[in-house]
Image (cartoon, rainbow, N blue to C red; front, side, top):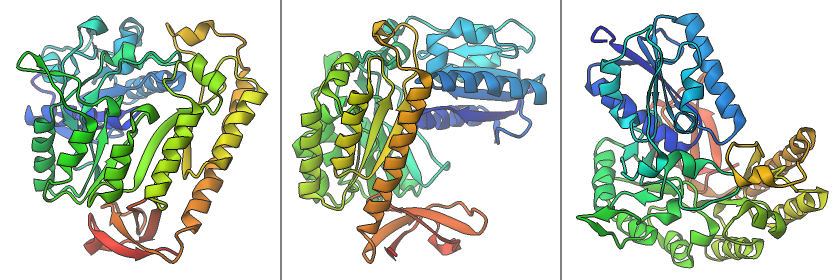
Length: 425
């Protein structure tokens, strides 16, 4: 394996996965590997998987087949949530050489050193109950906005979700370590940090010196606000029942935390929320949105929604649609329900036909487009600060306002990774 000097990565899924892939890349580059684009020839391919939906599983298998056609002698390493949940299934895919579960992904260097092409796939995994350590991760040099992982795992038990089975119990970094990482990112030239985690509002769980830490997400954001060099922070996603009014008010008065929240809803029907085992009702969600808009009328609010959950009838879906239509939100991330093994939702009846799930998805995506269009039009004529990304896309460059409105303009070298005052029009 000592002859392998190039490695390529592909990430499926969430912002958390992007931060972890970037950390895996740094570990291998430190060991002497040269990073390549995934479409280039490489000695080793690492696929960091998601398993939130069946599509993510299928995409992983398709990627392995593509590598087999292009580079049959290259080593293929699979890690991430799919690898933890179904290691035997992945190991049976022709071309896969190594499967790394949740506890072993950050030991990738040691495992690759011992790997030889042609052997049967090696599985390095353990029971998820034994995964209880936290590994800090962040993306750097990949994009202007850097994803900084501060929390992992989840103690919730939503009936549709496999994440606790794939990532284990809720645990987090210490505030002291997060501040060290933020300062390091600031020194590297990063302007914006997106705080990420599986259940970010649950930040604070963990042990230090054999004792349980007494820290909270509110404590974290207050201290991050004082870090010199970082101009912007965003909160990637936070559960409505964990989004305290103190956090909302702090963001409203912060110098650096952007007026932008992403808050999972999943359904606008209390009956469906109960079946999903969510820890709130639609009334609480509406209260949080109202509180945000009271302090920050210009704030962007993104929403996660699942359509086609078992037992969701047309009346339930109409409740969700009308709730979102009336709510002062900015955009939606719409997910079509997908059956996941070993979840309670598999026992809920009746099952929604797949074509109806897709129709409901389409309806909400159309609503999302209208919501974002209206939100953007509300700010026409205003001057807001835009952080432009470094990529030159066919002579154009992109950036986002503080409240997450996308701006596209002809590429200017001097604007790369810079915050520019921009009149919206």
